[in-house]
Length: 480
Image (cartoon, rainbow, N blue to C red; front, side, top):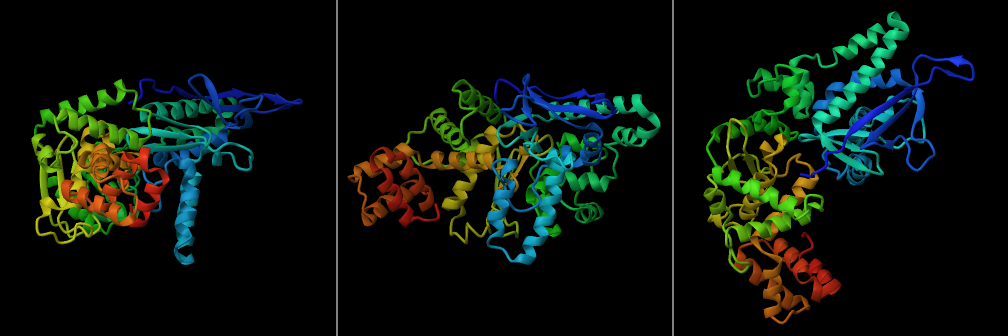
């Protein structure tokens, strides 16, 4: 949603000789974004490092398919940035048995070898990391010091251009020696369909083969089709994560049940919401700020005052979204939202979700209401991204998008100003007993969970309650 799209390119300057010794593949290599070097080093006199460019070509050739197709981490983490992956993994592993940790370490090491391009230059030390990881229709480029988000097409073009440039040099200098590597580069997208499906949905080849064999998923016909990533059923399988095959089948079949319908009001609301973000310069703000502000905008757009309880199901139906409660027979799954070329828009909620429990009236259940509002945010703000055509709540959706949707749901159901107004009307108490009474009032009035009531009160009343309010709420609702 940013106005300016970063322009990226690899710079390769050939070094024919050093102190009288001749070379054919030695080069000064650097990554340039918007005309300035951002890698391999920062703050040094030189912005390039000298190494053998054929190693970069070999790495890109071998890793091309996962670099362009893979969009998931190999273990159950969602770091804010690729360069944070080891820190998040270490936190996860600190509470896991050593036998499980070892297998995850191996999987993560293989993942890092592919996506951190500094691993193309074996033995070189002192370089900043250079992460390339696809995220929806974009590529994240992360040097630890800076992170850039560029369209996937621009990133693929930059990688292709540098590969072609190095290939031309190799053929010019010694065609016989380098023809095998260059030929492999030219065929870098060639692959069997099982491998393409495995990378596209983020699973292993064995699982991908079983999904194809059981007619649960159709494999991409080509690398080009896989990279376009516009098949809602394959997206659903990727978002489902490492579920058993029979559960993935249930998810895919549910997607198929949400037939295509016209939703002009939703399309208009999408355009208006995105325009609101850009016109108010919110597109570069933190995710929770974006979500909260769009929720305030939507309430104004729908003429809903802060003190009025909102019905997220009715809002979805107003936009002609297919809203249904279904028994998925998957306790850990809460909902599926879909809007693509063939299916939806739909929000399909799991009435047997573990978090929902067994309510007497599902449509009045606080958790279900939060889930519906969360998915409404995705339909408003994330439908422009191909990967967001399918969202499974609690899935592999990127962390920033989930944070934004969570903030939207909280503010849409219970505005911060309303939480502050109710607290103020009761004398702005800070003792636990009285504050608990405020939370109960908010929960009953707006039919939200204690965690949302506490979160919104903490932010809405921060000007008056400060740290004491936050600490008391933490004692009362630690899970918020």
